[in-house]
Image 1 (cartoon, rainbow, N blue to C red):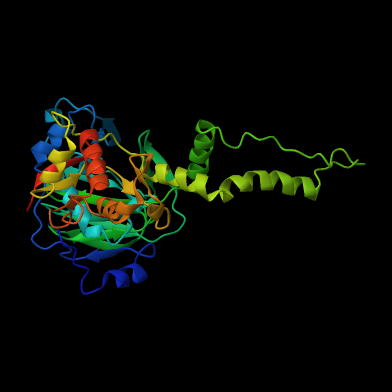
Image 2: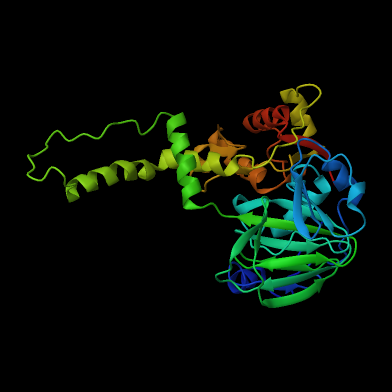
Amino acid sequence: MYTLNLNQMTQQEFLDKYWQKKPVVLKQGFKNFVDPIAPDELAGLAMEEAIESRLVHKKDGKWQADFGPFESYEHLGNENWSLVVQALDNFSEEAAEIIEAFRFLPHWRLDDLMTSFAMPGGSVGPHKDNYDTFICQGSGKRHWRVGDNGEHVEFAAHEALLHVEAFEAIIDVVLEEGDVLYIPPGFPHEGVSLDISMSFSVGFRANSAVSVFSAFADHLIDTEQGTQLLTDPNRKVVTNSGEVSNDDYASLKSQVQSLLDNDTSFKQFTGQFLTAAKHELDIMLPDEPFELTEVSNLLNSHAIKRLGGLRAFYFEDTVEQGLCYINGSELAFSVEIANGVKLLCDKVMLLPDDLSEWSHNAAFVELVTELLNQGYWYLAEAE
């Protein structure tokens, strides 16, 4: 279990002072930190088709970026290259434990756990991100420079690498094992490995209005909503046919606004949008489908654990009406088990003690059986 040390700040004090405001170094943010995955295991994952990965290095002084899966790394030598793997939390239970230390932030804001292995001199170059990130230093050391927020010119150092021009550092530090560097969106930064090192970055992303509108439009098309034509049966004669009157403009705007004002529809879209998997899930289907009676008994002796990367959320009002959202779909359930569903969404692992009042509830057992058979949750030994 990873416990985040905020250097004598409370979680709220950290949010008030730093969150989306300015970067900060948390020395020994994780005490006694141990890499949850070995470099050779990470390299092995990057050889798999389902894993999103890339190699960043320099060739003849020019930046290069190659995308996995990879067959070997021997040609890269012993310095100046970095391997980056996205969504490690989807494929490594041990690595996913790092995310648990950041549960003081809503999980719908989470992007993924990105992991980097670097040889001495390895880097992805100076850049800025559009998300909040907590860079957790694993084994080895890296030299980090962070600039202030502002107008920073970006350029393509490679077709797959967007860099920023030289910046003045407001943070210049060497991160050692267990140190954490928080960087808000828009602050340029660059990390260079000083020796063989591992780094684990927990990213929190916010969607742009454009991306939400685009996805909502797709949702309306898929659900055949918003197809009503604009009507104006009380139209009056106009003298200026080229004019769009204020009343007509208001009607057009109202037509679009009514779609946003439909809370039932927009919440359904939002729940599905926020829980849609951002990376391929490593679905764990059981060898044989579980039976209801079997699950009821197992809940008394086993923990149930959520699949890495699976997103499961609820709205504080509609959960009481029997609705939640899992992996991009709306799920209806009996209102009597609303508190049990909250547990499923709030916690990655539920122990028998957590489930004592639910293990014999027919509706809850039926739901858990369905989730187990879908491979979304799985049985784990109670700790």
